[in-house]
Length: 80
Length: 80
Image 1 (cartoon, each protein chain N blue to C red):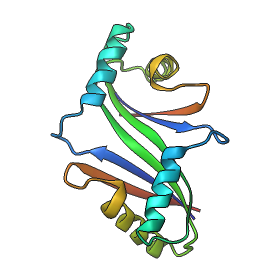
Image 2: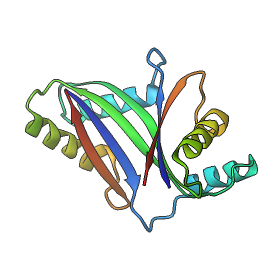
Image 3: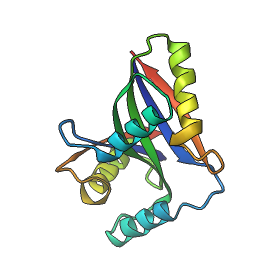
Image 4: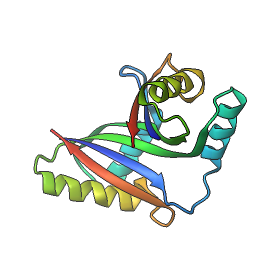
C-alpha cells in the first residue's frame, strides 16, 4: 500500500522559502504570482494492507518525525 | 486562481533525503516502510483567470525555476 503525505506550514506561519520563490519568479518576469507557500511531499510504500491501520501508522510517523506539528499541518492519502 | 505543484525526483535518481527518513522511521520502530521518496509541494496564487494560460504559465515557472528537469518531474494542478 502506498501513502502520500503533504506537509504544509500552518497559515499564519511565515514562509521565507516561499517568499524567496515568489521574489525569484517576479525577477524572472512572471507577474501576478502571490502567496507562494512551499511544503514537503513524501511518498512511502507500506507493508501494511489494512487501510485504517496504515493510515493510523502514517499519522503516527507524521507526529513523531515527518512534521513539526507546532508549525506544520499534514495530510495523509492512501493509494492501492 | 490557485495552483498546486508537485515536484518529485525521477525514478532511478537516488534520494538520500528519502533514505534518511526511511532509516529514521525504522530506528523509531516503524517496520514495513519501504521506498520513501521526498519531494516538494508548492502552492501559488495566480492573478490569471484563464485555466489554460495559468497552467502554461506555471509550467514555464517549473521549467525555469521550480524544478530541475534533468532529475525532477513536476505536476501542476489548478483549483478554483
